[in-house]
Length: 80
Figure 1: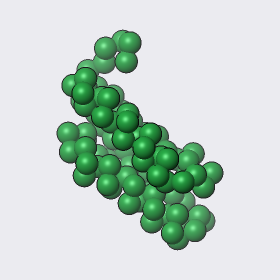
Figure 2 (figure 1 turned 90 degrees about the vertical axis):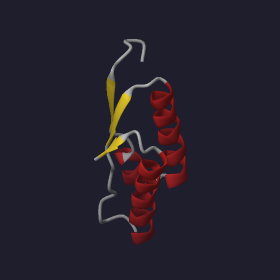
Figure 3 (figure 1 turned 30 degrees about the horizontal axis):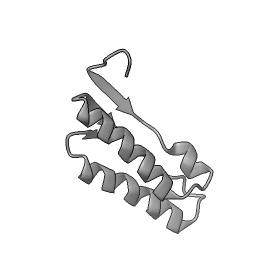
Figure 4 (figure 1 turned 60 degrees about the horizontal axis):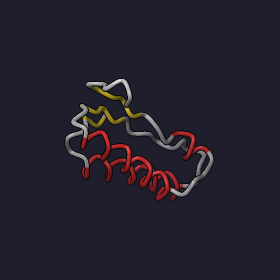
């Protein structure tokens, strides 16, 4: 942010899913990042991350839901 960017790509959370971290922690971190970028008026491209199939089904769903929730809550970010 010290370089005053016009656009940012946020593609974070894959390691959280691979390590089995609580999706709520991932949500809180990404929510904070997206809010900060929006407040500064920075165009944001937000990449959805899918947890690999070898994780438990509840974990796969929880991470999917986390990213789609963030996309809904941050409509100014371009969700891919």
